[in-house]
Length: 172
Image 1 (tube, rainbow, N blue to C red):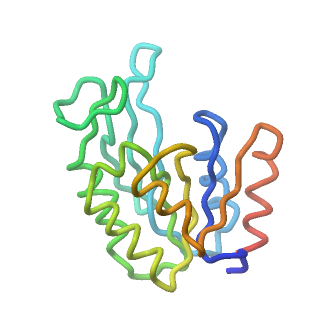
Image 2 (image 1 turned 30 degrees about the vertical axis):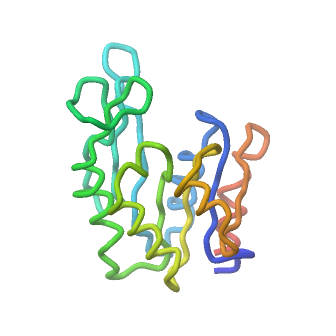
Image 3 (image 1 turned 135 degrees about the vertical axis):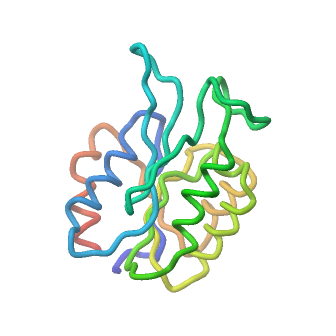
């Protein structure tokens, strides 16, 4: 991988297209073995009610939802630590055949899980390259990741989001 650093994170405002860029990178770079996960909206009756976690190996679960029971909350959404750890973290722990890890995203919901933070830190400290999305704002673990010397941040905007997937693929 030929990033300035081995870990590349996309950041930007909610809804700008960070996840779309990540998914397009995976699609375009079809010779690369990716492992990890991305998030997607759960929509019911015309409105967003939560978020799913989807692995590149085909597993999915609920990351958060308005209607689940959980002591962990971000805004109107309750966070399913169980699905995050049993699906997302499990995917990150299994090294197997992988060239690049993908984590969408390191944000307020995900950092409730100590297992998630530990798995991310292990990948960041490994020889494996990582491409991910990182919350634009945040303290604690989010800030620690943002401030690492081996992390490159790219801000996704409406003007660069369509060009970024091809640019990132050329750098892998």
